[in-house]
Image (cartoon, rainbow, N blue to C red):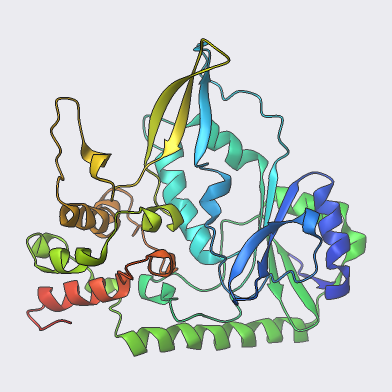
Length: 353
């Protein structure tokens, strides 16, 4: 695979080529210093492919918060035709690519496959980028998730001082790069050296975060849920929870949904697939009025159990990427890093915060 180099002044030409096929989104830094995904219709001024993950998780483009799955109850095992153009999401970070491994496992493997999700995944283009820095909430290394992409992307664009080091990841990405080969220059050794230097620098920042907060590594997570099922940690931590479900909504791996029937245009029956959140009281509510998790602390425990016990067992992967979005979005500031630290400490018979 031959690496290419794209000058920063040619980014707009590159994105215009993408926009001929896709609805393009890229990360942009706002006045508060946070990264958000914006559409190409706003131009590319301020585009920031480096930096850190945006606030919006990648799952939003494939596992949509509200999606019509039945229209008039016409029987079909295929996803209905979608008139919308496929998405191209740029600047995707490795924590989000890692999160998509959980989404793919849930919706594309096993006995029941989701044709809507599969269709969304097949048509879109993912352009990943290295993290060029870290914010205080980043702790991906603790989950053994690198801060730069290694797989799961169509094209990789590593941001450098004067441009981007470009690599293909899939045949779809390779075909696009080949069709637009005139935009690029050949990459030089100094471009690869600069990328490696940036990667080392960003990696050191993530490690500094882990050291500062005493965050345990995944090798220490074994049985932290099983031995702490009745720990007072759950009731202590959940006191600040207002049951808003923000932690579920911004998490790149959370995937729970419910089905809702309604009427459209008078008497046309339709069914929507809607995001759900395990922190909501009605989440485990069943017909007859019973609720397996009536208390909020039980639902917090269930959230951690699924991420750090259930998924390692059934999929061989932790359902946490260390992106820190749940803490950033939580109005009560329930800190997943502190919870993990305390669970490991209690498992080892040590005092915790």
